[in-house]
Image (cartoon, rainbow, N blue to C red; front, side, top):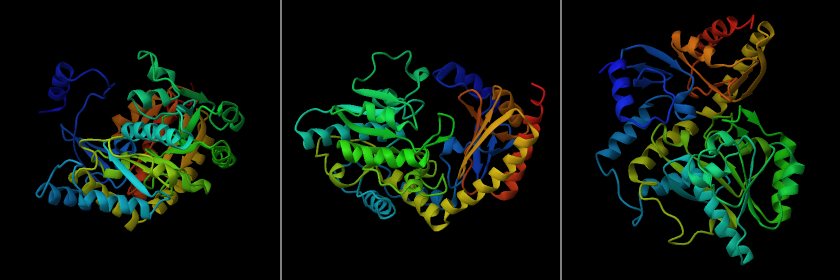
Length: 399
């Protein structure tokens, strides 16, 4: 089947929940993907910050193949060796102590919300349901995660939402302090708002959040779904702030492209759940955790966190020169290999021009170009991509 055939069949049989480009990706290797017509693209979206180790990394592919030949799935009524090993690997390289596995970032955040409420009930002896999150945050599409998400455009058609949530302005410690009354169990934040425009938290803000949580007896939950696993130049985004959250969530890059999510906790929070409190039929199954162990091992063994920091610095310098030449670029935000290019115009036309030159980027918040390439991307590939982006941006000079 070619692009046209697949798109036509998809329009007939697949629910209309995505604004899709009119082609179908068929295979990938490293930083590149190929569509059903055979065209090759340099991929700077990487499955939306999922393919941190590149497309089809040999160690991930080999781990999946070997495990699929042995046992694809069994339930969590039994111990699963791969799951235990991956949990230890995460704990050994983070502040976490115990891990619950699921299938996605939204599920991980749902689990974190439930964990916070169970922890508060055990600690305080009464219901303390409040969760504070930030305006412009994104935590997922399921109902708890959707309510935590601080963007009305995702929520507008799905009322009533889950009760007990408050939203405050990001990077505003006084707003958080004003909202943190004795009904609040936890604060749920991203260290960098990815879907919110690639906006990082200020250092003094995150240290203030941590201090406030300790002062008011609240859990600090960090959503590392997009920022985790080396993406920001450190293994986890919270490491940039010299703080340790009580709970953090993972997904996206954890499986090397295979669906997996994780809820990680320490201290009292790690002990809050009891048998029957939470579960996932597919969460942490043998195939998913084989992929996860392989992908995380690649990130650690190849120091992809350090590579992301170095390549991000290289991109920052290149984009700074581009910004001087083209007034349409208003701001550049680079944190490892999470890159936001804020424009004075809508960005979709630039995305489309790049696509016509076989470079895949995307646009968020209407006017922010987002680049989240594989951490394995080469400098030659970076130069190739930035040349295409500059060519596309240059056409906006007179707007």
